[in-house]
Image (cartoon, rainbow, N blue to C red; front, side, top):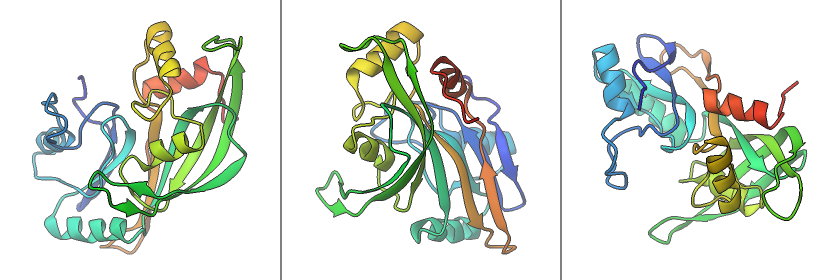
Length: 232
């Protein structure tokens, strides 16, 4: 994976944010023993100092990933995330025409069986119909949606979009196998189309409202063009 140097999109004396590429793990994990490259180590080596990830993104999700540069700031920022005080916004390319806007209030079960409340609001930014015959129809429909989770459950956005029958393109195992196979075989795209576009929070040291935005990764932008999904 060619990720060096990482794209830094925000930096001050206490915090730094990168635009994490698809496929990069935040740190070592027993459930991904195949990986030997991690965002924590890459950023540490790039900056020449210890870094602390204050939240997480799925390996397959790209976008804003925030780190603290000191232990105290790490604790303060983790507390903000845990208390739901950080506004997180994602964009996803999904199957079908989504409603203009909506809310998904659907509890999710952890691996240990614990059921947790999970809430996501969404709005549709663009829709398109393209001549891809994947099933019985001659065309296929897609939407670009903006997702705002108010809880932070594991795979929440992926599970919530699958729950309303608009799975994220490239998502495995929650997505549509036919769609994923088509995009991989016909377009050479194997990435999941979920991107963390921004995080907004109150800086613990200055009290200022900080908004960090991450431009789309190239593969996400390319698929928007292929599917003729435009924000205009």
